[in-house]
Image 1 (tube, rainbow, N blue to C red):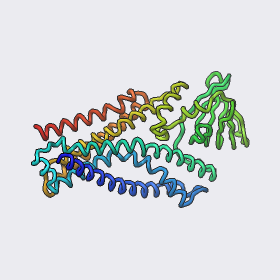
Image 2: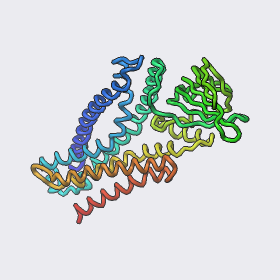
Image 3: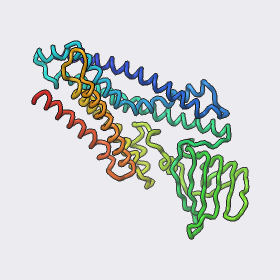
Image 4: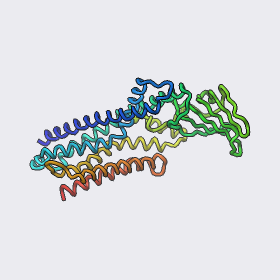
Length: 361
Protein backbone atom coordinates (compact mmCIF):
# COMPACT_ATOMS: atom_id res chain seq x y z
CA UNK A 1 0.00 0.00 0.00
CA UNK A 2 2.80 2.40 0.87
CA UNK A 3 4.43 1.80 -2.51
CA UNK A 4 1.16 2.45 -4.38
CA UNK A 5 0.45 5.58 -2.36
CA UNK A 6 4.03 6.76 -2.89
CA UNK A 7 3.67 6.41 -6.66
CA UNK A 8 0.41 8.37 -6.54
CA UNK A 9 1.95 11.21 -4.53
CA UNK A 10 5.04 11.21 -6.75
CA UNK A 11 2.90 11.41 -9.87
CA UNK A 12 0.92 14.32 -8.42
CA UNK A 13 4.16 16.12 -7.58
CA UNK A 14 5.65 15.64 -11.06
CA UNK A 15 2.45 16.72 -12.85
CA UNK A 16 2.20 19.85 -10.70
CA UNK A 17 5.89 20.57 -11.39
CA UNK A 18 5.34 20.30 -15.13
CA UNK A 19 2.41 22.71 -15.01
CA UNK A 20 4.46 25.18 -12.98
CA UNK A 21 7.33 24.86 -15.45
CA UNK A 22 5.02 25.60 -18.36
CA UNK A 23 3.52 28.61 -16.60
CA UNK A 24 6.81 30.05 -15.33
CA UNK A 25 8.53 29.49 -18.69
CA UNK A 26 5.72 31.30 -20.53
CA UNK A 27 5.82 34.27 -18.14
CA UNK A 28 9.63 34.50 -18.27
CA UNK A 29 9.64 34.34 -22.06
CA UNK A 30 7.05 37.10 -22.44
CA UNK A 31 8.75 39.41 -19.92
CA UNK A 32 12.25 38.85 -21.31
CA UNK A 33 10.98 39.24 -24.89
CA UNK A 34 9.50 42.64 -24.02
CA UNK A 35 12.70 43.72 -22.24
CA UNK A 36 14.95 42.47 -25.05
CA UNK A 37 12.83 44.18 -27.70
CA UNK A 38 13.17 47.49 -25.88
CA UNK A 39 16.96 47.15 -25.55
CA UNK A 40 17.76 46.15 -29.13
CA UNK A 41 15.02 47.77 -31.20
CA UNK A 42 17.39 50.49 -32.45
CA UNK A 43 20.24 48.20 -33.52
CA UNK A 44 20.97 47.46 -37.17
CA UNK A 45 20.72 43.67 -36.87
CA UNK A 46 17.40 43.79 -35.01
CA UNK A 47 14.59 41.60 -36.35
CA UNK A 48 11.54 39.99 -34.78
CA UNK A 49 12.69 36.40 -35.50
CA UNK A 50 16.12 37.29 -34.15
CA UNK A 51 14.69 38.63 -30.89
CA UNK A 52 12.45 35.56 -30.54
CA UNK A 53 15.50 33.35 -30.96
CA UNK A 54 17.64 35.46 -28.62
CA UNK A 55 14.95 35.30 -25.93
CA UNK A 56 14.73 31.53 -26.31
CA UNK A 57 18.52 31.28 -25.86
CA UNK A 58 18.38 33.30 -22.62
CA UNK A 59 15.37 31.40 -21.27
CA UNK A 60 17.19 28.39 -19.69
CA UNK A 61 19.50 30.62 -17.62
CA UNK A 62 16.62 32.66 -16.21
CA UNK A 63 14.56 29.51 -15.63
CA UNK A 64 17.46 27.93 -13.74
CA UNK A 65 17.44 30.85 -11.31
CA UNK A 66 13.72 30.38 -10.56
CA UNK A 67 13.91 26.63 -9.86
CA UNK A 68 14.16 26.98 -6.03
CA UNK A 69 10.96 29.02 -5.95
CA UNK A 70 9.27 26.57 -8.30
CA UNK A 71 10.14 23.75 -5.88
CA UNK A 72 8.74 25.76 -2.95
CA UNK A 73 5.43 26.57 -4.63
CA UNK A 74 5.05 23.08 -6.14
CA UNK A 75 5.48 21.53 -2.70
CA UNK A 76 2.97 23.90 -1.10
CA UNK A 77 0.43 23.55 -3.92
CA UNK A 78 0.56 19.76 -4.01
CA UNK A 79 0.33 19.30 -0.23
CA UNK A 80 -2.49 21.85 0.15
CA UNK A 81 -4.42 20.14 -2.67
CA UNK A 82 -3.99 16.74 -0.99
CA UNK A 83 -5.09 18.24 2.33
CA UNK A 84 -8.24 19.76 0.87
CA UNK A 85 -9.28 16.37 -0.48
CA UNK A 86 -8.50 14.75 2.90
CA UNK A 87 -6.02 12.39 1.24
CA UNK A 88 -3.32 13.15 3.79
CA UNK A 89 -5.84 12.55 6.58
CA UNK A 90 -6.59 9.11 5.13
CA UNK A 91 -2.86 8.37 4.86
CA UNK A 92 -2.35 9.30 8.51
CA UNK A 93 -5.36 7.19 9.54
CA UNK A 94 -3.81 4.22 7.74
CA UNK A 95 -0.76 4.51 9.97
CA UNK A 96 1.55 6.16 7.42
CA UNK A 97 3.87 8.67 9.05
CA UNK A 98 4.68 12.09 7.66
CA UNK A 99 8.19 10.90 6.78
CA UNK A 100 6.79 8.07 4.67
CA UNK A 101 4.34 10.11 2.60
CA UNK A 102 6.85 12.97 2.30
CA UNK A 103 9.44 10.66 0.72
CA UNK A 104 7.88 10.86 -2.81
CA UNK A 105 8.06 14.67 -2.64
CA UNK A 106 11.69 14.57 -1.51
CA UNK A 107 12.57 12.15 -4.31
CA UNK A 108 10.72 14.37 -6.79
CA UNK A 109 12.63 17.45 -5.61
CA UNK A 110 15.93 15.58 -5.96
CA UNK A 111 15.02 14.52 -9.50
CA UNK A 112 14.06 18.08 -10.49
CA UNK A 113 17.37 19.29 -9.06
CA UNK A 114 19.33 16.68 -11.01
CA UNK A 115 17.53 17.59 -14.24
CA UNK A 116 18.33 21.25 -13.59
CA UNK A 117 22.01 20.54 -12.97
CA UNK A 118 22.56 17.98 -15.72
CA UNK A 119 20.22 19.26 -18.46
CA UNK A 120 19.02 22.82 -17.93
CA UNK A 121 22.40 24.18 -16.80
CA UNK A 122 24.33 23.00 -19.92
CA UNK A 123 21.53 24.44 -22.07
CA UNK A 124 21.73 27.70 -20.11
CA UNK A 125 25.51 27.90 -20.54
CA UNK A 126 25.32 27.24 -24.27
CA UNK A 127 22.39 29.62 -24.74
CA UNK A 128 24.07 32.44 -22.82
CA UNK A 129 27.24 32.08 -24.89
CA UNK A 130 25.24 32.18 -28.13
CA UNK A 131 23.25 35.17 -26.88
CA UNK A 132 26.49 37.08 -26.20
CA UNK A 133 27.62 36.38 -29.77
CA UNK A 134 24.35 37.62 -31.25
CA UNK A 135 24.32 40.77 -29.10
CA UNK A 136 27.91 41.55 -30.06
CA UNK A 137 27.14 41.05 -33.76
CA UNK A 138 24.20 43.43 -33.59
CA UNK A 139 26.19 46.07 -31.74
CA UNK A 140 29.10 45.85 -34.17
CA UNK A 141 26.73 46.13 -37.13
CA UNK A 142 25.20 49.31 -35.71
CA UNK A 143 28.60 50.59 -34.45
CA UNK A 144 27.01 51.77 -31.22
CA UNK A 145 28.37 51.39 -27.72
CA UNK A 146 25.66 50.73 -25.23
CA UNK A 147 25.90 49.08 -21.86
CA UNK A 148 26.24 45.35 -21.79
CA UNK A 149 27.95 42.79 -19.66
CA UNK A 150 31.55 43.90 -19.04
CA UNK A 151 34.40 41.42 -19.07
CA UNK A 152 37.04 41.41 -16.33
CA UNK A 153 40.16 43.54 -16.81
CA UNK A 154 43.39 41.84 -17.87
CA UNK A 155 46.89 43.04 -17.12
CA UNK A 156 49.84 42.05 -19.25
CA UNK A 157 53.49 42.93 -18.72
CA UNK A 158 55.54 42.28 -21.85
CA UNK A 159 59.07 43.60 -21.49
CA UNK A 160 58.77 47.27 -20.53
CA UNK A 161 55.19 47.47 -21.76
CA UNK A 162 52.59 47.41 -18.94
CA UNK A 163 49.06 47.28 -20.34
CA UNK A 164 45.62 46.87 -18.78
CA UNK A 165 42.98 45.47 -21.17
CA UNK A 166 39.21 45.58 -20.79
CA UNK A 167 36.15 45.54 -23.00
CA UNK A 168 32.45 44.83 -23.39
CA UNK A 169 32.22 41.14 -24.29
CA UNK A 170 34.59 38.26 -24.99
CA UNK A 171 33.96 35.99 -27.98
CA UNK A 172 35.61 33.23 -30.00
CA UNK A 173 36.81 31.23 -26.99
CA UNK A 174 38.64 34.15 -25.44
CA UNK A 175 40.44 35.43 -28.55
CA UNK A 176 38.18 38.37 -29.40
CA UNK A 177 37.22 41.32 -27.18
CA UNK A 178 34.69 43.81 -28.49
CA UNK A 179 34.75 47.54 -27.63
CA UNK A 180 38.22 47.00 -26.20
CA UNK A 181 40.08 49.52 -24.03
CA UNK A 182 43.88 49.28 -23.61
CA UNK A 183 45.61 51.54 -21.09
CA UNK A 184 49.42 51.71 -21.25
CA UNK A 185 51.57 52.64 -18.21
CA UNK A 186 55.20 53.63 -17.92
CA UNK A 187 57.67 52.30 -15.34
CA UNK A 188 56.47 54.89 -12.80
CA UNK A 189 52.83 53.85 -13.11
CA UNK A 190 51.71 56.89 -15.12
CA UNK A 191 49.31 56.54 -18.05
CA UNK A 192 51.11 57.22 -21.32
CA UNK A 193 48.57 55.95 -23.85
CA UNK A 194 44.93 54.89 -24.09
CA UNK A 195 43.66 52.89 -27.06
CA UNK A 196 39.93 52.47 -27.71
CA UNK A 197 39.25 49.84 -30.38
CA UNK A 198 36.11 48.37 -31.87
CA UNK A 199 37.66 44.93 -31.38
CA UNK A 200 40.87 43.32 -30.17
CA UNK A 201 41.78 39.97 -31.71
CA UNK A 202 44.40 37.82 -30.00
CA UNK A 203 46.95 36.61 -32.53
CA UNK A 204 50.26 34.78 -32.14
CA UNK A 205 52.24 37.19 -29.97
CA UNK A 206 50.13 40.33 -30.42
CA UNK A 207 46.67 41.88 -30.19
CA UNK A 208 45.26 43.10 -33.51
CA UNK A 209 43.15 46.20 -32.90
CA UNK A 210 40.63 47.51 -35.42
CA UNK A 211 39.07 50.98 -35.68
CA UNK A 212 41.42 52.42 -33.04
CA UNK A 213 41.40 55.80 -31.29
CA UNK A 214 44.71 56.57 -29.57
CA UNK A 215 44.84 59.21 -26.84
CA UNK A 216 48.08 60.48 -25.25
CA UNK A 217 48.29 62.99 -22.39
CA UNK A 218 48.32 66.56 -23.76
CA UNK A 219 47.88 65.47 -27.39
CA UNK A 220 44.97 65.38 -29.83
CA UNK A 221 43.46 61.87 -30.25
CA UNK A 222 44.36 60.09 -33.46
CA UNK A 223 42.37 57.52 -35.44
CA UNK A 224 43.91 54.36 -36.94
CA UNK A 225 42.33 51.63 -39.00
CA UNK A 226 44.41 48.94 -37.28
CA UNK A 227 47.12 48.69 -34.64
CA UNK A 228 49.20 45.95 -33.04
CA UNK A 229 50.07 45.55 -29.38
CA UNK A 230 52.61 42.88 -28.48
CA UNK A 231 51.60 40.35 -25.84
CA UNK A 232 52.88 37.23 -24.15
CA UNK A 233 49.37 36.05 -23.24
CA UNK A 234 48.14 32.72 -24.55
CA UNK A 235 44.62 31.98 -25.73
CA UNK A 236 44.06 29.41 -22.98
CA UNK A 237 45.00 31.92 -20.27
CA UNK A 238 42.75 34.64 -21.66
CA UNK A 239 39.88 32.19 -22.03
CA UNK A 240 40.17 31.07 -18.40
CA UNK A 241 40.65 34.60 -17.10
CA UNK A 242 37.57 35.92 -18.89
CA UNK A 243 35.34 32.90 -18.36
CA UNK A 244 32.03 33.76 -16.70
CA UNK A 245 30.72 30.93 -14.47
CA UNK A 246 27.20 31.09 -15.87
CA UNK A 247 28.52 30.44 -19.41
CA UNK A 248 30.35 27.25 -18.35
CA UNK A 249 28.35 24.02 -18.38
CA UNK A 250 28.37 21.78 -15.34
CA UNK A 251 30.23 19.05 -17.24
CA UNK A 252 33.06 21.47 -18.13
CA UNK A 253 33.52 23.15 -14.75
CA UNK A 254 36.03 20.63 -13.35
CA UNK A 255 38.24 20.96 -16.44
CA UNK A 256 37.95 24.76 -16.41
CA UNK A 257 38.97 24.85 -12.75
CA UNK A 258 42.00 22.63 -13.37
CA UNK A 259 43.15 24.69 -16.37
CA UNK A 260 42.62 27.98 -14.54
CA UNK A 261 44.71 26.74 -11.62
CA UNK A 262 47.52 25.78 -13.99
CA UNK A 263 47.63 29.41 -15.19
CA UNK A 264 47.45 30.82 -11.68
CA UNK A 265 43.99 32.33 -12.29
CA UNK A 266 41.58 32.59 -9.36
CA UNK A 267 39.06 29.75 -9.44
CA UNK A 268 36.81 30.90 -6.58
CA UNK A 269 33.89 31.86 -8.82
CA UNK A 270 34.09 28.64 -10.85
CA UNK A 271 34.41 26.49 -7.72
CA UNK A 272 31.44 28.24 -6.11
CA UNK A 273 29.38 27.65 -9.24
CA UNK A 274 30.40 23.98 -9.28
CA UNK A 275 29.43 23.38 -5.64
CA UNK A 276 26.23 25.39 -6.05
CA UNK A 277 25.13 23.13 -8.89
CA UNK A 278 26.06 20.05 -6.85
CA UNK A 279 24.04 21.28 -3.87
CA UNK A 280 21.05 22.43 -5.96
CA UNK A 281 19.07 19.15 -5.62
CA UNK A 282 19.43 19.36 -1.83
CA UNK A 283 18.39 23.03 -1.91
CA UNK A 284 15.17 21.92 -3.59
CA UNK A 285 14.71 19.30 -0.87
CA UNK A 286 15.12 22.06 1.72
CA UNK A 287 12.49 24.13 -0.10
CA UNK A 288 10.16 21.12 -0.10
CA UNK A 289 10.61 20.60 3.64
CA UNK A 290 9.87 24.29 4.22
CA UNK A 291 6.72 23.89 2.12
CA UNK A 292 5.71 20.89 4.23
CA UNK A 293 6.05 22.81 7.51
CA UNK A 294 3.30 25.22 6.44
CA UNK A 295 1.10 22.88 4.38
CA UNK A 296 0.59 19.68 6.38
CA UNK A 297 -1.85 21.08 8.92
CA UNK A 298 -5.31 19.83 7.95
CA UNK A 299 -7.77 22.41 6.65
CA UNK A 300 -10.81 21.30 4.71
CA UNK A 301 -11.40 24.55 2.85
CA UNK A 302 -8.40 26.87 3.18
CA UNK A 303 -5.06 27.22 4.83
CA UNK A 304 -4.11 30.01 7.19
CA UNK A 305 -2.90 32.90 5.07
CA UNK A 306 -0.34 33.89 7.68
CA UNK A 307 1.12 30.38 7.73
CA UNK A 308 1.39 30.23 3.93
CA UNK A 309 2.91 33.72 3.84
CA UNK A 310 5.42 32.59 6.46
CA UNK A 311 6.43 29.65 4.27
CA UNK A 312 6.89 31.88 1.23
CA UNK A 313 8.89 34.36 3.29
CA UNK A 314 11.07 31.56 4.70
CA UNK A 315 11.81 30.25 1.22
CA UNK A 316 12.63 33.75 0.00
CA UNK A 317 14.99 34.33 2.93
CA UNK A 318 16.71 31.00 2.21
CA UNK A 319 17.15 31.94 -1.45
CA UNK A 320 18.54 35.39 -0.58
CA UNK A 321 20.95 33.95 1.99
CA UNK A 322 22.10 31.27 -0.47
CA UNK A 323 22.71 33.87 -3.20
CA UNK A 324 24.49 36.22 -0.80
CA UNK A 325 26.79 33.53 0.58
CA UNK A 326 27.46 32.37 -2.97
CA UNK A 327 28.67 35.90 -3.80
CA UNK A 328 30.97 35.71 -0.77
CA UNK A 329 32.34 32.41 -2.07
CA UNK A 330 32.92 33.81 -5.56
CA UNK A 331 34.88 36.74 -4.14
CA UNK A 332 36.96 34.48 -1.86
CA UNK A 333 35.59 35.81 1.44
CA UNK A 334 34.54 32.28 2.43
CA UNK A 335 35.60 28.93 0.94
CA UNK A 336 33.43 27.95 -2.08
CA UNK A 337 32.48 24.60 -0.51
CA UNK A 338 31.24 26.31 2.64
CA UNK A 339 29.42 29.02 0.67
CA UNK A 340 27.47 26.48 -1.37
CA UNK A 341 26.71 23.78 1.18
CA UNK A 342 26.29 25.38 4.62
CA UNK A 343 23.02 27.30 3.85
CA UNK A 344 21.53 24.19 2.25
CA UNK A 345 22.47 21.87 5.12
CA UNK A 346 21.22 24.35 7.73
CA UNK A 347 17.91 24.82 5.88
CA UNK A 348 17.37 21.07 5.58
CA UNK A 349 18.13 20.61 9.28
CA UNK A 350 15.72 23.39 10.27
CA UNK A 351 12.95 22.02 8.04
CA UNK A 352 13.38 18.52 9.43
CA UNK A 353 13.46 19.85 13.00
CA UNK A 354 10.22 21.80 12.55
CA UNK A 355 8.51 18.74 11.05
CA UNK A 356 9.70 16.61 13.95
CA UNK A 357 8.29 19.13 16.40
CA UNK A 358 4.98 19.36 14.57
CA UNK A 359 4.43 15.66 13.92
CA UNK A 360 6.25 13.86 16.70
CA UNK A 361 6.11 16.45 19.47
